[in-house]
Length: 384
Ligand code: HEM
Image (cartoon, rainbow, N blue to C red; front, side, top):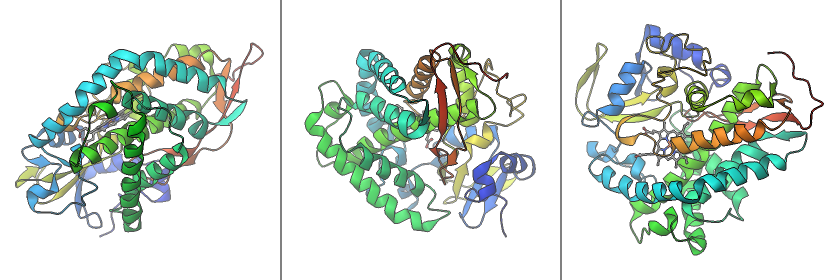
């Protein structure tokens, strides 16, 4: 049977939320033939799946299913193996965060905004270079000379996350993973002491080697997409006076992650027969946990489609939950706020044309976002 869940269709690419809302209301644990998986959209079901690693795992090998060697990383492991690998990254990441991180991202954001012309492509000129710079700071490496190749490979990898819907994307994404592994191996020659790359030497451990790529790319692609999606969301309806942007704080950053966060869905493998909202989910079944659907669940978020920049509490799932919860999301949010702080020095920030959506479902982002800025005191914003 054809499903209403067709995330690569033009309608859902433009706006997936009407479909998420229908699924939440009518079929919250929805069987999808093409994906051969359950699609889960309510906040409480999604939270349960993410937290219960005994029943819902990330490692298909626990069920006797193969996984390509280059895909195996901390993201595809279950505790306790997962816990040990995750710890290897957490310590150097925190040390970097307490050290050079803050000063470096402020300098990078200032430079990027200072270099903007009146009209620019926010994705290419701001979000991607700034996110890449930020992850390089964490890894203790200079901004890479081969950054164009990295950006292209990372985009291919993100497209490949939708291989269940478009199998032609699988092979290029496997090649892109190997390519990024090769880049990271080369960047090691310039790794400063104290950064993640110097702290984690994988030797011939393929899980650690792939995890170095997974952490780097998870940080880069999600953060650059968060910056683009957030500024797109802010400027889609109106122009912003710089001073208004200065008022956005940590609660606003969380609200932007809830409404415009890039990660639409993650998947889990069911490890034992369970009942989920009256459905028999069997050992071996795959579940697509639609975080972006859960993030607009009216049972949890009053007026779920409205941006309330003072919303509190805000238990969104945009950074995941449980054993695999994101350990860099607070850095992504901080970078967003630092960037908005820089933009707040301008008189005006506004859309300068149609945004071009990236044709991706699992991680939502943009290929192009034309913006116009005005410096000096001559500008007048259109009224809100
Ligand atoms: C410096 C920035 C970031 C870094 C280094 C980073 C890194 C990671 C890593 C390594 C994981 C996997 C953790 C594990 O499997 O134990 C992860 C998970 C996740 N990240 Fe991030 N991340 C960053 C920013 C972000 C941002 C900005 C978002 C979204 C707004 C995000 C959303 C997520 C989500 C939803 C998961 C859960 C995946 C799952 O449950 O399978 N991350 N992140």
